[in-house]
Length: 196
Image 1 (tube, rainbow, N blue to C red):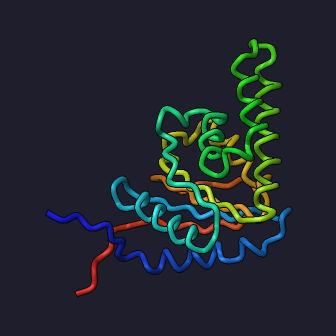
Image 2 (image 1 turned 180 degrees about the horizontal axis):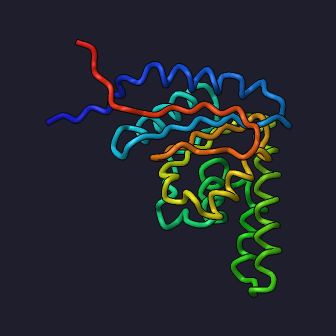
Image 3 (image 1 turned 120 degrees about the horizontal axis):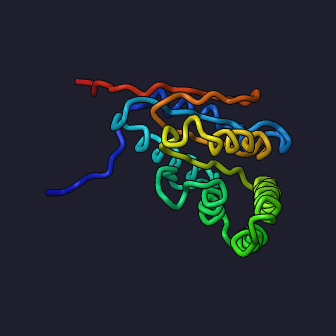
């Protein structure tokens, strides 16, 4: 049996998200990032839609991560998630960030907070340098697995600091409340009927 990897449907959502991200390359560097939230029941197609959006954005010369599943054990802390993003965006450019991660790993409890802050600040500065040349879109999935946690609160507080040439596609079972004014587009994904 032949298996086809063809994406069908979701035209309205795809066009709206593409419009939402269409001005990333001309956005102000110190502006707010663009966020698209895809939420709905499990198994409805959020991950597949996020992946298709990433593929389309990449075809428009936007640096795009693959779908990063926050539920996976390697992404369950802020620093491990930032490592995954750095690995996918431009690992060689993030060398300074990786050095701070090593220092964090070797540090004692008294110095951990200092090294975590250094790693986060370095990550943000490097990302801002990358987006000066090319927009970046990060795709995060299964946000419901960290909903109501300090991890999600901290992650959302970092988004405005990424700048206007960054975008985020956030997928999960629930909508996400953003505490600061950010250009957010939200879709409740539901089943659809194929045309006859």
